[in-house]
Figure (tube, one colour):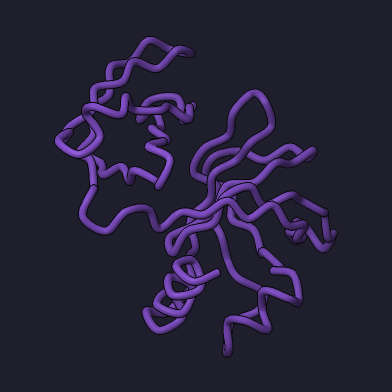
Length: 157
């Protein structure tokens, strides 16, 4: 069973295991503190998905909203990073990418200054692509120390 994090606004972001579609969903205020599992039906393919909810640490996902670049076949393509976490990111793109594609991510300079010794570029793998142009990706080459630094940055920034 996959784990979902609740952010400070009570928003979860379930991702369909079958088609990769995802949706931000607000949980009702009265159930946020006691909920342990969430059932979600994908609006794209109709698959029923069950998730475990992580309330203990809050969210390790943060809205970021900065431009970055991805390197694909020797071209650098600008993207807008929507959300950032210790495990990956979501971004908007105007290029054709598919789930499973492995790319290089070039973080903005101001982010690299805050995370010392950040490996540049960062290898990512696309895990989901929505029809609206939003992609989800996981980090492939971050060591545990760098993940901790990103986690600290997410908490204090």
